[in-house]
Amino acid sequence: MKKRLEIALESLEGFRNPKIELEQYVTPANLAGFILTNADLFGDLKTVIDLGCGTGILAIGSAILGAYAIGVEIDRDALSIGRFNAEKLGVSVDFIACDVRDFKLKKRATVIMNPPFGIQRRHADRPFLEKAFEIANVIYSIHSAESEFFVRKRAGENGFNVTHVWKFMIPLKRTYSFHEKAFKYIPVEVFRIERDDRVPRR
Ligand code: SAH
Image (cartoon, rainbow, N blue to C red; front, side, top):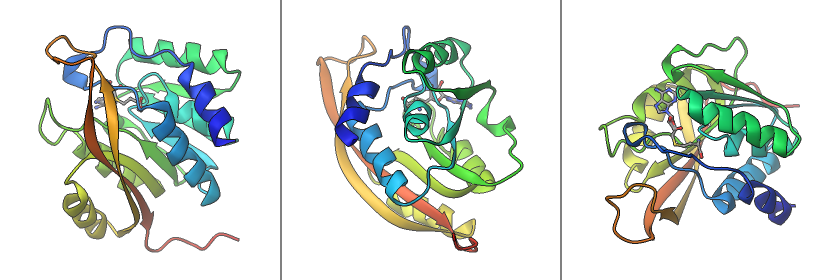
């Protein structure tokens, strides 16, 4: 299942002209597959919100595994690729063009996201975490290495607990001309964060 999911996600289109100020990188298909199959095993794939969904890999993968998925993205060019990608794999995802700060949700859901790492603009991941704490019961989020202290602290302050931390090296393709090698490996941390007062699932 995981392999088939990864192969499907591998076939998706990425950003055509990635916008540097928005830190547009596609999550590698194998990492997306890892996160989504884990989320599935935890029973977290019911309603999924992908904040900063870019070209849609996390939202589309969630939909393939049976979730109702919403992708929220500020860049309309990325969203149109996301729509194309969902159609290509024959799944339905609701794509919404807005800033994550302005996104509203009535009933709490699972947030799965790969926010900007805040390399171009410091702390660019903060509005993403804040929105996730507002709308989620469970959060899966990808951050640059050495984020654990900060993420645990923010989680605690918002009534959440970090239940899992997974550390990986991910290859980043050379998307921007100032990168020298074809790709380089960067260390990342993936968190599963759960609301403390969560009503137990039945
Ligand atoms: N989730 C995608 C893209 C990750 S890159 C993937 O995993 O492949 C981060 C994305 O966040 C980019 O597509 C960028 O355009 C988007 N983004 C950055 N700031 C945003 C904001 N304030 N509101 C909504 N989307 C934003």
